[in-house]
Each structure stands twice: as structure tokens, then as C-alpha cells.
Length: 187
Image 1 (cartoon, rainbow, N blue to C red):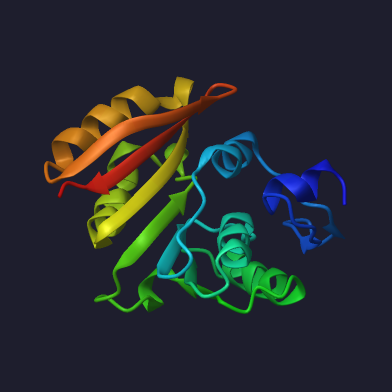
Image 2: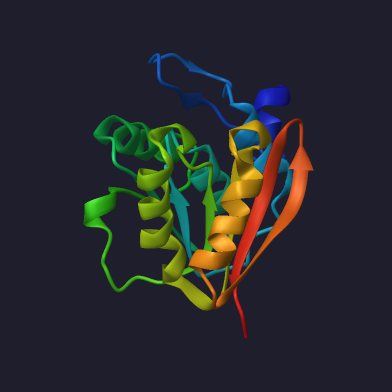
């Protein structure tokens, strides 16, 4: 495969259907690409979440790296859920469960969350989204969020630190104008 597929599957080949309906090597936005490059390898198993899955690159990368894990790919957009379902099937990522946000069991806890959150929805909606999902980390769970620096990654980090006092929130990595933020429960 070419560079696109290597990036989105962290070294494994794959072909996907993206938004315009064309099956091709993945076209990744820089944030998703940066998260895939810099996030640490996922645990071997557990329950993982890709929040705001789009066509599913983060969910598929987690699922293929950790075939014993249950990977939830969640979006508010039915088209995104459908694309992710089809792409996961086409790339033998049978452990991906694509679902609308409202269809995820309320008691489910996540050992890993990867997200390229929708910053442009505005602060209030973004904060509500993060507060709905980050507290669902398991006791040993970690979340990695990628945020464009000029769209407020540093102010988001300070907000997270005050909004989640029982969590450690830090800058994990930087890449081409993006920051990868880490959120994990304090012991």
C-alpha cells in the first residue's frame, strides 16, 4: 500500500470508502493522522472508544492492533456509522461496533478513548460531548484527543484540568500545529 494506508492503519494495509463514496486509500485529515502517529499502542484487549468516528480510521487502527478488544466507533451521524461499519467489514476489523451515540449502553466503561473531537461545534457543545464520554474511562483507562493548536488546544487542556479534577490532563505530543492531549484517571 501507499503512504496513506500505512498512516491510517499504523503500518497495515487497507482500503476504505470515504465521504465521497469512492473506495481508495484513505485521505486523512492532519489531526487524525497526528493522533495515529503519536498515540501509544493500545492495550491488547479491553473496551475502546473512537468518539466522532467519521468513516472509521481510528476505530479500525485500534481494532486491527488489538483484535481481542471491543472497539466502539461512535458518531451522531448515521452516514458515518454506516461508512465505518462497511469499512470495518472490508478490512476484517470484526471487533468494531459502529453505533450512534444514543445507542451505546450507558454503563459501558472504556479502557481507551481516541478522538479527533469536533472543535468547530463550539465550546459549549464540545464541553458537553467531552463530559459525557471522558468520565466513562475505566480506572486504568486513558484518552487521547487531538486538537489543532490555533483552535484552542491549550485552553481546552486547562478547561479539562479544572472540569475533571480526578483526572490527570496533559500535553502528550505535538505534530504539525496539532496537540495530542492525554486524559487519565488519577490513582
